Image (cartoon, rainbow, N blue to C red; front, side, top):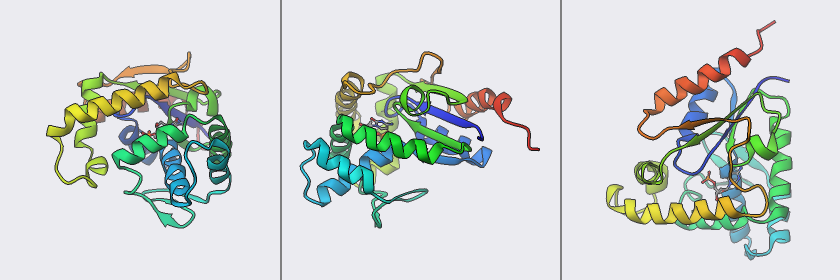
Length: 225
Ligand code: DC
């Protein structure tokens, strides 16, 4: 099996950019597991399924056909921007609390990462999905910094009518609520794995974070035969 890199942490800690850049530098596949929870929430809503019904939502998670590349598709629907709205932030957090849904998605994520050569980002990759990952990184930043980054994140603001900075207060509140939901859920709450390298990215430019993560990975790469 080729190397598997787990990158976990709360929203706005820089996981997406770091995971994507590291994967591209290594020529590895990047898998954003948050996009899977979001896409399942979107598809369940589209099918008229009550998001409170864990079994029914898990049915979607078990059978959905995902495309996870520059675009996110579920069952043939391109949901790349539709899943990045405040309403879908909330819907994905609801879906992610159901143990049945987590079981289904964790099993699919294990299958996707089985052969390695993957950078997988999420909340429980180093703790639950791949506890044996070769490199585990937990990215964090202060709530203020994470809210500021989210406010400037084009993917998240594209669907809103106005630009970023005046929304920081609102975004900080929504992030706080979602963090609370992620950290206190009974199954796989957000927390660093005991053997993860904890990186506080507050005030650190993203390319410096990428360099730090690459420095952790380099010694673990298997020599090409
Ligand atoms: O990373 P994100 O904001 O796109 O994640 C969307 C939601 O899914 C968020 O509430 C956290 C949850 N999630 C999770 O519980 N486990 C993961 N591995 C990835 C995301």
